[in-house]
Length: 93
Image: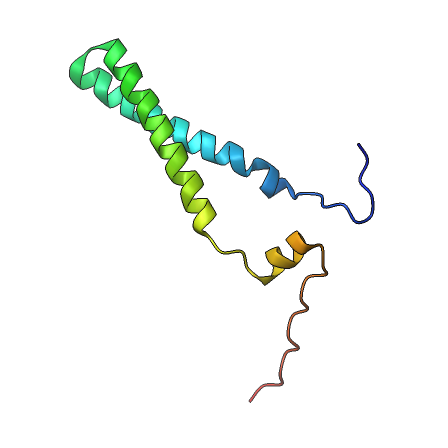
């Protein structure tokens, strides 16, 4: 699988974004599970609640990320066009 000149190559940030979502959901699930474990002292209940928290947070993060509108540079990158040039700096007024 080689990259041809017109082929899109995702940036490192784009590649690691799903890991950020899963990691954030895992942290929230561990925290929730520990709170339930400390208060209820029931391991099975803590695991169930942690699993539910993981799924809810992961779906919420995914839906919120889909709601963000890409800027002009991202849209150009998706379309395969050149990114728009920055406007020239005007002399000081």
